[in-house]
Length: 157
Image (cartoon, rainbow, N blue to C red; front, side):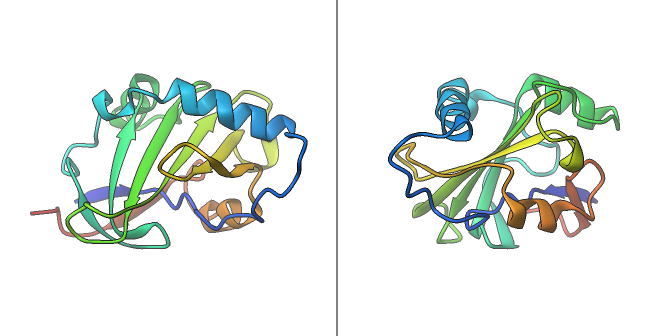
């Protein structure tokens, strides 16, 4: 079974230490508001709920997709402008100890060199820890189709 593993990297870039918010930080703050109801979004078939993870995101993850991303992926298409994927990372297998929330959003003409993906990582309270063209995230995803990484693994139980 093909399962989507988003390598949304919590440690993707340096933590923000700037006093003045960058454009990317502003985009990330707006995106946090845009994903406020993500827990009501779609999940991939075969990957509903909290599943084990072998990524930097934690011992387990839960992935949510807005309608644009879900429809595109279900049809084997490239995620269009406005498509969003959200990954909750947890420190434990049960998903009771949150680690971070990471997000990818396709923004037309944002970063053509990396599929026009905007990367954001947040503490569970919504504090932005990474935003923008995060080199580490991009390098992890560069091998994936449209910067999405797929692996074959057993379906979660």
